[in-house]
Length: 161
Image (cartoon, rainbow, N blue to C red; front, side, top):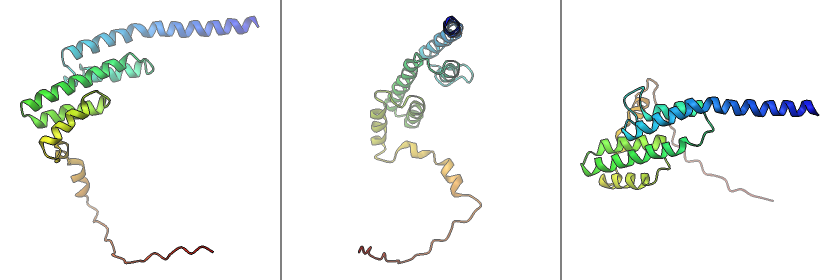
C-alpha cells in the first residue's frame, strides 16, 4: 500500500514538474503572440507572426486554453481590418482579411456580418468566388469528361403484399 502511494505521489510530482518546465516557454510564447497582435503582425512577416506562433503554442501545449483568447483577438483584428478596407473600397483586400479570419477564428463576433456586408456590395457574386484556381485546374485535367447517357427509366411502383 505504501508503494502505491509513493508511485502515485511520484507521478503527481513529475506531472507537476512537467507543467512548470513547460510554463516558461509557453508563457514566453504567449507574450510574443500578444506583442505580434498589438503590432498587427498577424500573418506576415513569415517566421515572425502571431498565427505561426499560435500554431507553435498549440504544438507545445495542446490542452492549454490560454491560446483561445489570442485566437479570438486575431480574428477581431482581421474583422476590423476588413471593415476598414470595405470603407476604402478595397474589396479584394477585405475578402483576403476575412478569409484569414475564417481560417483561424471562424467564431469571431462580427465575422459573418462583415462577410454579409461585403457580399451585398457585390450583389450576391461574392468576392470569394474570385479564387477559382483550384477548380479551374481540376476542370482542365488531361482526362476527358465521362459521357452521360440520357435515360428515361421509369421507376416501378413498390408493391407490398
